[in-house]
Structure formats: C-alpha cells, structure tokens
Image 1 (tube, rainbow, N blue to C red):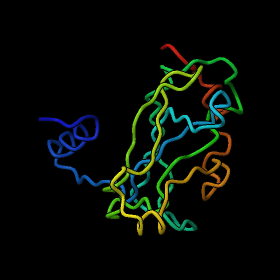
Image 2: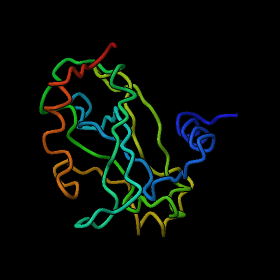
Image 3: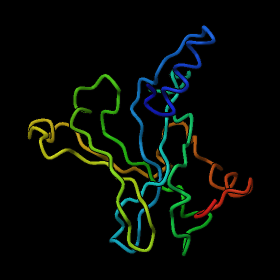
Image 4: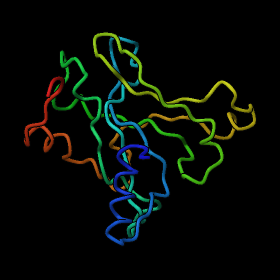
Amino acid sequence: MCGGDKDTFRWAFRILDLDFGVSPRWMSALGFRNQFEGNRFCGHSVLQYDLDTPEGFSRPPPLFVHSNLLKHLGAGGLGKGSLFTDIRRMSDDYSSSPSLNYAHSWVYMGQARGMCLDLDWHDTVPEELRERERPETIPVSEEEGHVFEGFEDSWFDEGGRIGGW
C-alpha cells in the first residue's frame, strides 16, 4: 500500500490533516567523479528540492540530501573536498516535463567505489528530444545561490562517514 518514504510522508500528512505537496523539480543525484573510471559520475545521494522558489532564485533550490548510498561506498581516497562535488540531473528537471518519461536512474557497481547512482536517457528517447534536452553533470559550486558552500565541511564535522554505518 505504500510506495516508499515519500508515500510514508504523504500518508502521515493526510492522517494529520495537513497539506501535502511535491517539489516542482525532479530529484537529482549528488556525488563525485570516479577517477578509477575515467571520471565517470558516481552518485551516492539523492537531492530533493524545495517546494517554493525563494526570492533571488530562478527555481527551487536543493532542500534535502538523502545520502542513501554513502554506506555502500569504498572510502579510499575520498574525504573532505572530494565527496560532494558534482550534481547529475536532467537539463529540464521540472516534474511536469514529459521528457522525464525517458529519464533513467540506476545503481551500478563503480570500480573501487561500490554502489553508485547514475542518470541518463532510456534507449527509447526520441532523437529530437535528445537534441533539445540532456542529462548534465555540474559542479556543486555552480548550483544557484551557492547552497552547497560549507556543506561538505559541516557534514564531516557532524560525524558524517563514508562506508559502513
């Protein structure tokens, strides 16, 4: 009856008679580029976005970092400055975009890293859509509003760990 953690919140809000809404932006992956695989993106966390666009922003910024694969990573060579470096998302990541019907997220085993999340097109994506939109990987420093400034330091300072529990 429940489709995961988001449904858990939806049902809890309904029981508490509170308004429930979903972000207008689709999730992104947060991670790093794996030097053991030619800098292939290795996502370990899911970015979930705000419901609203704050003043000074052009779209809703990241609100939650759901670090669901960090416990499955190999920590060798990873630490402050190398863990939360890149975001992988669709260029048009609004939840209402029909192009998301062709987006494909999956987990793969990264060389020397363990489980990694990636994002790309399904094989069936129409060529005209592929020419107009794309999966993109950007450095966290390019995220609007510099919302990740100091995030990684705080994560480690508060006891964040790579691999294990």
